[in-house]
Image 1 (cartoon, one colour):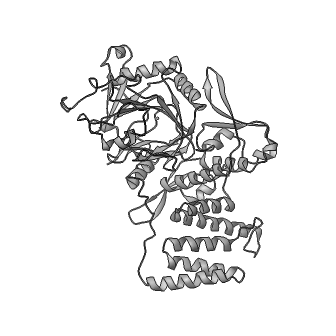
Image 2 (cartoon, one colour):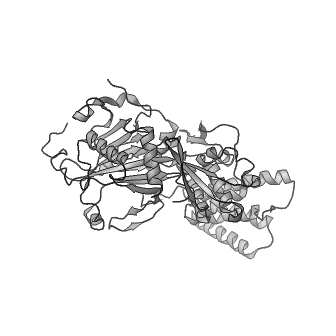
Image 3 (cartoon, one colour):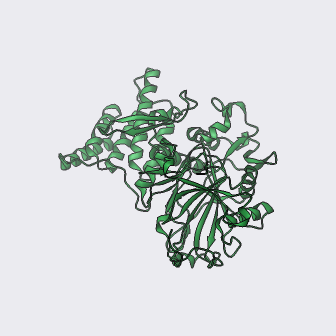
Amino acid sequence: MIFMASPKGCLTSSTSWSSNHVYMYVDDFEANILHPGFDDLAYHVQHPVGAYRLVKRLSQTDPGVLTHARLLTGVVNGDSVIKTTELPTEEDLRMSALALIRLQDIYHLDMRSLTQGQLVMLARQSDGTVVKQKRITREEPAFSLDAEDTVYIGDIAYNEEEYLNAVLWYLVTLDLLRGREQVDITDDPANDSGLGRVDVLIKLGDTLTKLRQHQRALPFYRDALRMGPENQVTKSKVMEAERQAALQGNVTVKMAKLLKGSIPYQEDYENLCYHSVLRNQPPSSRLSCTHDRTRPQLYLSPARREVLHEKNPEIALYHDVISDEEAAMVRALAFEELERSPVVSKHGKVFHSNVRVSETGWLHDNTTDVISKLSRRVGYITGLNTEYPSAESFQVVNYGLGGLYVPHVDYFEETQLVKHVNRPGKRILTFLLYLSEVELGGATVFPQINLIVPAVKNGALMFRDMKRSGDFEPLSMHAGCPVLIGSKWIANKWILDRGNEFKRPCGLTPEE
């Protein structure tokens, strides 16, 4: 059974250039740069297909055409917060393509609808048939992907060894090319851009061969040989596919998604992310809500606490912890500090990886009065010391198009702490503030306990990284689901064991 926290509140008894910004707008565009279909730029940026199209257009735009590009990240005291930035690059376009691959894969989006700018989730019934389960966006196409887009995305998937996803993108490319040929009424298998069916047929055959699907690859190779000019390379591919198919005989090789060993609980994590968007409603019967007045500072303004998991690990969602104005201030302060988020290996090596797609900035408690006040508030709610060296600074993270973090734990092992001298203790508790509304996606999920927590704006998710015995809590493993529509901002406050020895629950405290 999957448990899901309520996104509506608690009653008593929420890289790369293209992936990590809330709103973007470009000044001094010539009229022909954004048209057609770029009337509502904010909607384009938050929609995965629209964002990809915008990044593609900007990455291929002559910089001399534009005076400058600027990003709008929020509003503070009625004033827009502006940051000048460079135009997106080819690498940004590649990351945008990876985001579309990731979103289609995890949320089971209908490929044909996706090329038309529509987000339609699919579901497989008990008899194996696939049906359209839920339409997420409006029915009329707002913008679309053409064959050049889909084959490029397929190539990116192939280069990343995501062969099953590459097959899907190449197949929809063939579909688009057939439609184009019918409109053009031409017998030429190539089109004006130089992309033809023969090219895609060969790509499909090569990809299926990588999946050991030689029987399935043969028809594509044969069609390419029949439609294209005499080509010895294609002939060789046909002969090799025939040979491999004969060797396989009647043995059926299942064409399944290859799971990455580096992602723990990958199937459970992706299933929870899928259901977080598909269901988008909680089974509230398992939740309990209270007004927390356990400390004097909370007497007049109690914390609204929603218990999601009672123990092992203890997980709670607090509502209305931060105001809209405070959240905007945190986003604005962190924006100038944002850099691509790193990950830390078990041996303490810091590096960048596609398992974490976001940007990170750090805010110390003494940055402003707003930040210091927010840190104290976290202390009132948790009952723990949140001042350095008993806690870390706020880590502000922005997840944009397809932004995610695969299943991971927040605590560091001893071998990792050696490399992180700026952390004077072990993480015992995570306090995660949601700083923005996320239209779709971006849930926090716990794959080992089947728990989904939507990104509740101005709320805060609290869970323990350490057991009362002092051992780390492996069941605290969690993940950030890919952002499907919109942008997700969070701020993490990690509380450490140092200075909290007599405040945190210990092994002598009886279990509840």
